[in-house]
Length: 480
Ligand code: S5P
Image (cartoon, rainbow, N blue to C red):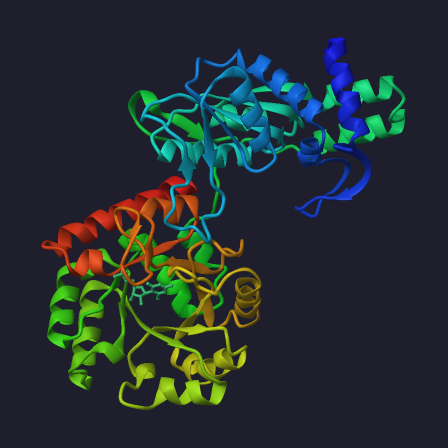
């Protein structure tokens, strides 16, 4: 466990610039920790930045020969840049801003499918940040076998990553760090013991029976990540929401058809063709030129035949009293036939109160629009956060969100993403598209909403099946 003097000096420098601190710190997770690391400060110390990059480069020699390197954003990004320039090895940049740059490539730089890429990180705790970057690189066809990290906190990250098929090579471990700092009188014996006890007590262990995914030679073992739809159903406070969670798993579909056609006959024809592939059919009643009660009855018959729910994409946005009438009255009488409706949060909680006043007793449910797929949407940042808070307050009626990302961690909610095509891109009126796997795996939403790509297809059934498989397999991968 002896460190050479250069590494000892490096640890002391990191301590001096307050990249490593000791005391009582509340971590993001809410846990109280005696040690805290913030290596972002390194950018203010160029000589130290170079030194860190050099030691990381040295340990990267233990890795299989790689074609490029990629830093985990943000702290490791400048470190990877220095490693790249100093050693003349190409770099890739992983984007983080999926939210506002939905259609942009998430990996920047030149690469070929099958290239080996080394991931660079500053600190590893559970290994999840490194793994997220690895997954994204893999989605773009790159291969990752190794990652390097400056500080391994010894809380199970190395083991978890190994379980995911990634060898983590570290420059310094937490034990080495506190040993050096104690030796040089920077921390006392009590703090030294506290840190080591904290590490031992807060390990992220690998589940005893990891799921096995993949096939043939590429089979890897992965830690179980997340609850299934069926498990999440139990958290949902709305009966229809619970039914939807179950239906998705029974039908193996997290695909929503957006039936944006203007003639009722065309809609019914399309829905009968693809109904078996979807869990929800979404309508825009106000674009249907020949809307009648008869159309509604036929749509409901199809919903029974193919077992899907009906979602009227009305996007209510007025005061409570008005939306109550818009929902219950008027030509469309939406309350009579739509299982699910949605609302903008812009007018405040009154919009939900108005809708739930008539909707709850009929067993209906609502979604809030937390983000939009269109370019320049104002639904972001604080607006999105306030929308999430509103949903939590009214979770008997609100079952989830229209959003491009998993806008909160709460698994009682469903996250539904529009703007999905088999290839990323955009239309001429501001719509921005991501692929099913970006939506479900990377942005961690639950359902995809697809319109034109299906109803304009020559063979809507086959295309719908392609979307169903892509979205459901991405979900299976996420929970495995
Ligand atoms: O942010 C949004 C929210 C919704 S509900 N962006 C969207 O595109 N939608 C709806 O999803 C939109 O009104 C349309 O009905 C569907 C997307 O259709 P597509 O043809 O672009 O797949």
